Length: 262
Image (cartoon, rainbow, N blue to C red; front, side, top):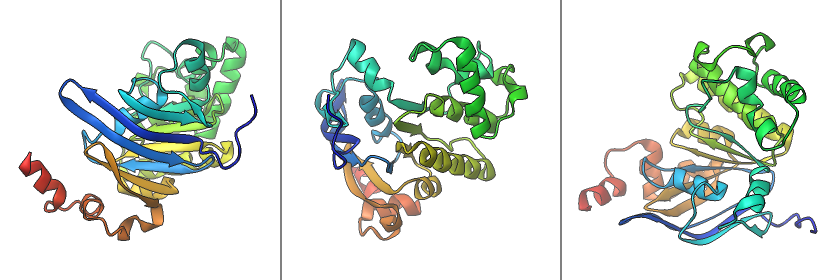
């Protein structure tokens, strides 16, 4: 297969719909992320951020719409084809989502061993290298995640995401539950590691400070659609009343009015 042209978006989503019973979560999501760029999707709880990222990852099957990675349609892929697409990606889950039954290095090496079939000895070396890149010392490698602070657990999750040196990195609420100092550290680590890998990044967050810091562009999702997208530097003067209300955390505005009408 020929390599995709440089102008082909790394991630392209068009007309994405997803319903759970009577609840329409996604109602036509359209977005693109250029290769090597970072996009943050903002929006309130239940707006469809997590469902969008799960559909892109293939963890959920959309009802309709297109999801292209490097120009290749991936919506509905299964088996080996889906595994090949997943191998391109690394994911930092909300709350780190570490395995309590595994040591720190085993958590970091999980994808290397399971998805990339790497021998454990080599996987441990790669895991330790990834840990170093996020500021974790080798001496914690054989500890259990429960022995670590929340900030350290988040770093372990980030080390796991970058260990396979993926082409795409997904970040699910990367600063949730962290104090402002640790949140800032995680933001800087994300920026550094994404740049080092030359990866494409997609972050979902309600933390505007994090979105402004880690992303080149920001998109806002509301009622299952992208209602605004633009450079991160423009989000504070978007001219969109929904975006303005969200980023300023105003109690009054169109979002509240829509809730009241519902």
